[in-house]
Amino acid sequence: MSGNRPGCLLGAVVLLSAGLGAAVLLGGGAADAVACGTAIAAGTACTLTGTLGVTTGTLTMTSPSALAWSATETGLDQQLVDPTTAHQSYLVNDATGSGAGWHVTVSATTFTTGTYTLANTGTFVSTGSTASETATTAPTAACSTGSTCTLPTDTTTYPVAITTAPTSPAAVTIYDTSAASGLGSITIGIGALPVGWWVNVPASTKAGTYTSTISLTIISAP
Image 1 (tube, rainbow, N blue to C red):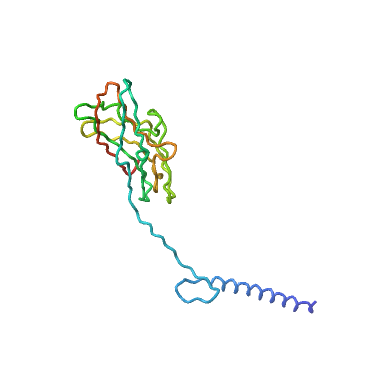
Image 2: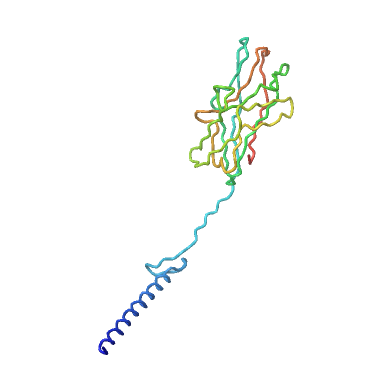
């Protein structure tokens, strides 16, 4: 029995030695990671911090430069839409990075020849359609080329009646974007559902050229 004891002790020493060796190897691996910026040995990892700074931009809108309608008297009331494709969309560029949302408003003075006028109520209407003045659809929104945008969530109810006035006409929201949407460069009124600008002309309208001063504004937040 006494002859067996040295073998058992030797085995214990070997196991302990192996365990200690493993601990030493693990400790050495953890020590290999050092801060970058100084000379390091081949095969040794170093760590550093990468920082990206993004500064705020601006909220802008590029709108049509004019709107136009034409009609020939027929003896009937007429609902006219601006037929020019370039007038049926506008570009919003939300580069603020805030996610605050935005809305677009329109105001318009009375359509007048200087002698004759159109009614302030019921004359000017905006929709998401050039096919129907009473369309309840919103204009289609799409990201501009090169912009991975967040498409707007429009909460506007269509059609939008724009009441005119001789002076200081009230502004009416024609596109209202919820917070956290509408970021990036976005075209409103592209594709299947363009922006429809409608003018109602009663059969009793006198002949002439009627003009109105129309103001479009983009405002931050819904």
